[in-house]
Amino acid sequence: MTGAPKVVDIGGGNGTLLAALLTAHPAALGVLFDTPSGLSDAERTLTETGVRARCEITPGDFFAAVPPAATDT
Figure 1 (cartoon, one colour):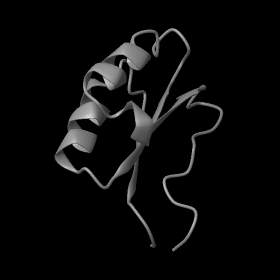
Figure 2 (cartoon, rainbow, N blue to C red):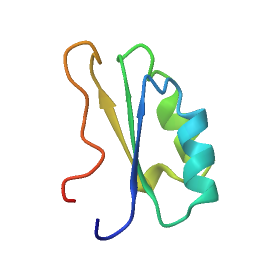
Figure 3 (tube, helix red, strand yellow):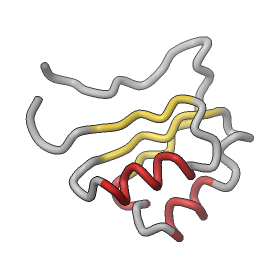
Figure 4 (tube, rainbow, N blue to C red):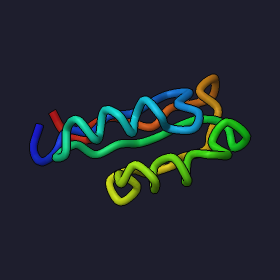
C-alpha cells in the first residue's frame, strides 16, 4: 500500500472512535460510515478533535455496501 493508511469505521456513529484513531496516528486518513441519522453529530465531533480534514463522512447502509479501505495492494 502506498501513501497514508486509511481506516474505515463501519457503523461509526458520531466518529468518537475514528477521531481517537486519527489523533493517535496523524498520517492516517479516515472514512466514517453510518446511516444519516447515525452520523448526525459526526461533523461536530471530527471538527472539535481536529481531524475533520483527514476524514470523509459517508452515509450509507452496511447491509447494502461498504466503502473500501484501500484501493491498491
